[in-house]
Length: 487
Picture 1 (cartoon, rainbow, N blue to C red):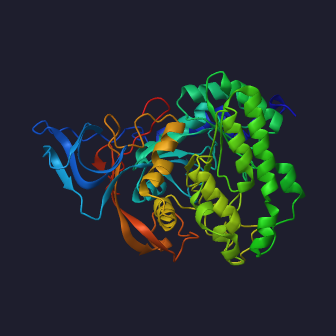
Picture 2 (picture 1 turned 30 degrees about the vertical axis):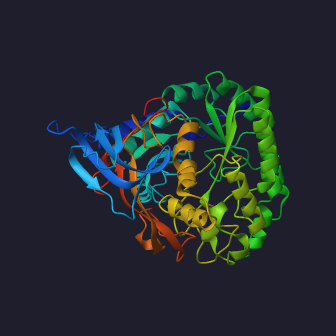
Picture 3 (picture 1 turned 120 degrees about the horizontal axis):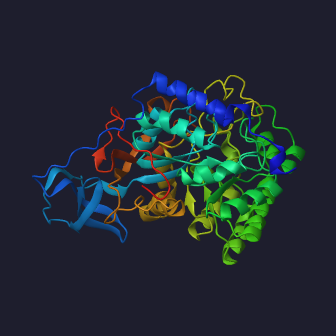
């Protein structure tokens, strides 16, 4: 079956979306107005000065003073230099100044499924976790971000709600090949596709031959394809996940399904010369072939997620559908190999795959893994979750920041994010690495109070977050919408 034989779902058709845009503008005439940037105080050298004994610089932790003007880092001087700022902040001795994190895998689901999540709640949660930039996935919003019109609608919805900077992925689905270039030119950071049913009918998957066709198209304008890599045939032949036994659900999403799909992505990348990225790797079996593909010079990268690096299938209670995600959380031996892959560079970085849903969709009453929605809400907790596990393993905070800030920013070509460096945006997080807390879902900012980390003791608290030199106050959304090449 070729890409030309399947058309867009009705809810994604541009004419349908244009009507929604007209309705939205009529109901929200001021929605496109961006929050004004704070004016510079010209009586001082800098708008903001941050002094800290511990600053995560590109050369490691050092004593520094940071000068910010017009939202940019314009001075980095030794501690005690006495930079002059309209506002000056001195960090406590137990605090480290980090670059704001960049989470390239967040499902905001707005518009269309805002009872699952929304830009207000998602960006507040991100800010509370030290994340200053997110890239929103093209599903599970309605319409999906598969045409220029759908991107325009999503931007209209997001602009007045964003507490941090927000960028967007486009979708690659059967029937939208003609819209890929317009989405690229409108500034999406790349395109997401599935190799099996996505979970929502309005975002159908590509067959492997369709993937190759789309990669050939994307290669002509150097766009990135990001792939949910599980093989639909292997899933179809696996046992059904019905019931409350987690082991049955795990058997329904075997490692082989991931391995087969990743092999397809590698070979289609090889044949087309395109740029690709494997999402949310859970199968450690795939590491050798990814390592080999990189050694062959293929432009392929891979991410994994906090839940695969910290949680264990052996410890998941039956009926605990808060843990359900696809691909699934696997065994302890698998987790250890994922850490090895992260440390040796085969896995490039960590993203949250924040994928929330309503409590009813999680089927909490019955705990049926075959019925419950698969997804974990974790954007607010990701830094603390990873830092807690990394410190236990003797891995430094500098590596955590590399995996969660600089490397994802580099892959999606965010040129001024992910580092504390001259010329970069003053996206900063004040982090207390030794402060402990116990997770209480009711205190988190994401819309639905459910997390598999409930009751877990974690280390590391984000005490304040700055976006472009302005503190996030959780009252006034001052984030911006960003686009590829212009951030």
